[in-house]
Every structure is written in structure tokens, then in C-alpha cells.
Image (cartoon, rainbow, N blue to C red; front, side, top):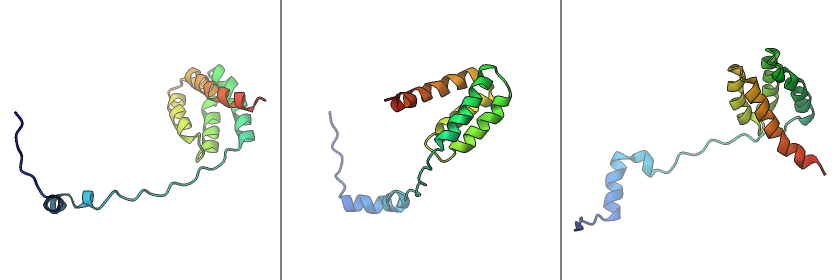
Length: 115
């Protein structure tokens, strides 16, 4: 059995809600402008990556500093978020995982560059 609830006129509902939820009725807050992504210096990125890979393979602690150089380079680019995730793995000394993810993310881009 369905109950019949009283119908509330929209103007009364809005008036009542505006007393309790003034911010909700004023619309969503304006989004802060997003800074445009900067282009990645691909040549420098590749050079740093080539140096980093053997360090990761051999579990060398120098990989931490080398990774930081890469992270600074990608800051503000499309890769920044991915490197934030990888940073946690580097700090946990999970070099094998970092190397695996770097190689996986590099594979599609190198495939695109090949004619």
C-alpha cells in the first residue's frame, strides 16, 4: 500500500531549504583554474631514464637520487601523477616494481614512434 504524502509547492520547498542549506542553493563553487601542463623535455627524460634503469636492475641506492631528478623533470607535465605513485614504490625500495611500471609505460610510446 502506497502512502499519499502531501504535495509541497516548489517555491515553498526552495524557501525552506534555503534557510538550512544556503550554500547548496547558490550553485557549485567555482572550480579553480587549472594550470596548463608543461611540455616534457623528452631528450632529457630519456637520458635520465637510461641512467636509472641499470640502477633499478641492480637495486642500487643511487636510483633514489636519479629517480628524484626524473620526478623534478616531470613535475607539471602529464607524467607527474604517475611519478607521484612511483615515488612511493621508490621510497619503499621496490625497485623491481618501479622498473616494471616504467618499462610498461614506455612500451606504448615507443611503439607509436616506430613507423
